[in-house]
Length: 587
Image (cartoon, rainbow, N blue to C red; front, side):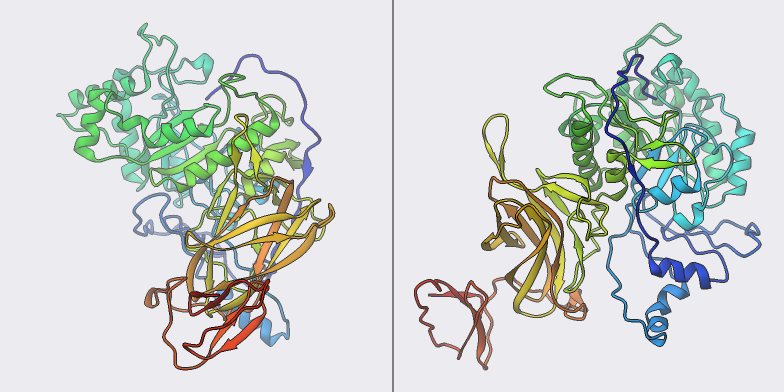
């Protein structure tokens, strides 16, 4: 665990209070369900009964990895809720939403697992750990309902096996066991200070516990070493792992140690460095040969980045402020979510014994246990996009601006639109010049599902002083560029029109105007039944020509419809410029 010795006492602006109203669906479920809900994550399903009687055996659902595909709960109330609402005569729009990321976690010191803590993190955080074998006191409030899972850790080779086994017996939903914490660091800097030989001697005990309880086992968590251990040696990250593997094989008939995942820690400031660390570092040609041989025999292992934030201080062009910590966190989370090499990650840290977010501004919470409040960073971390590849937004569904599937060069901050229920917004979504005076064009990309070939109205919630200009691309091909009017510094809903074709698409918005602009949400107007029901059976090209016997609808760039028979050329008057017919330009 990283622990800088002397940190500044500079205070950040007052933290924002927690907000949000419980979703009606969840409220109805809680009020009508006769038994505990079923956790909504494959690999973490736990069937509970009213008396919470331990099952006679552990129910294990097959899964390939910690961060595999997650399904929604099959709870009967969720299946029948729309029918119930219709019977009650209620007309309620059921908003779509991304599934919570199974990767996203948080490091937390005890005792902070309060119900307020759980409910605050519930929208975006799926798991947590505290460098110990169990929460103190035992139990995450509403853990089963919230789906936030606890992962025990064997901090060093002298962990309490009895206490760990007692916790695992009482919590059969547990899926993950974390290995030693930073064994190549001294205890004074948060490490467990274990030589590879000692670690190898006691690792079979950790393996046996994982085997007995059906747990996925994560390797010792490694960071770049710089201190002498008890053997008088400074151990590099890959060198320690290589020696650990070698010592283990000596003691166990040439058998490799079990490590289902490799745990890493990093406090590098820049997101680009984190990308290199999780995707390339372990597999570089100059890594310890014993480690490379291990991967050759066992295959590459996914990464658990169990501690990360910007903690190097002011260096290499980085200045540590609350804003810079937030901006790099947003980029790091996107890298970790989009990387297939990453199985999970945990931000350092939640509260950490301090209820202020002073330098280096990495705390998720401020306030107190009795009056828990998000910091600006915490609110964003808990509500960032889950990068859910199974989520396709349909006409009529409100798309939170922050729920992109891809993004570059935008910034996120807390919601400032009093008419929006969103927690965070795109606070900077405009073209700009970087420190090299190079023009940077930001973009956001969303997955959509439309069922009809027609001109759709796109509504966007924007705030700007002098208008903005956005290029719209569908599946990588430019549709049109629109100059949108000024909202005069106030939040307003601005509309434009886009010609879309049936199918699953990626809709990208490039902002090409250098003027401040914010975006809160967007929506393709229409109804949710205007979508492709069986996407696997239909493949559409956004600009593919069509063969039809009837007249085809045509539109000019202002969205006005013009009707023409097949094969007939349309003459456009000045100012109309281009008409689209059957996927072809007609001038």
